[in-house]
Image 1 (cartoon, one colour):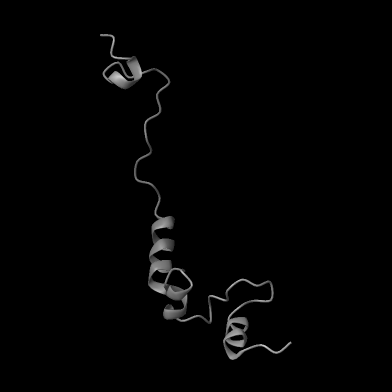
Image 2 (spheres, one colour):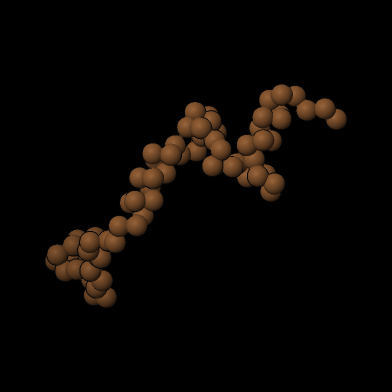
Length: 74
């Protein structure tokens, strides 16, 4: 079976297991495939590496000032 030039080009940008080879793709190709561009991927990595400044407070008791947790029976 002969492959078309488009199929050959697509196969060239894929790894052996069928995943896209992001190292050889241009930003236009990434956008066409619905993937993050290099700039977006770098920003994503940066934001993922920032330690969270403040974790949410955990409370095991209902907040008496919140009508949604107390049922509004006050």
